Image 1 (cartoon, helix red, strand yellow):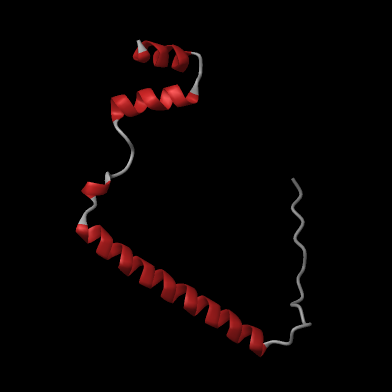
Image 2: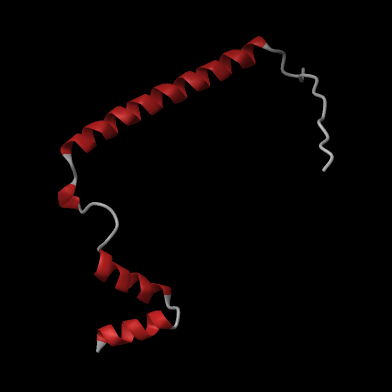
Length: 84
């Protein structure tokens, strides 16, 4: 009875009913908590360290370039006009 109602709602365009039916047929997307691979957790820590070092380097480079140039000088730029 409940399944028939879900199908009826899904046929009429109810997104939640469509999702419910898709979950029942295909399964949920992603890994379940008990399926987390231990090497995945180690890789996550490594990736966070790499991202942190890249962001730190970018911020330091930006701060260094800001110290080297006067604040009120802007580079000369020529606008580009594209005729279509």
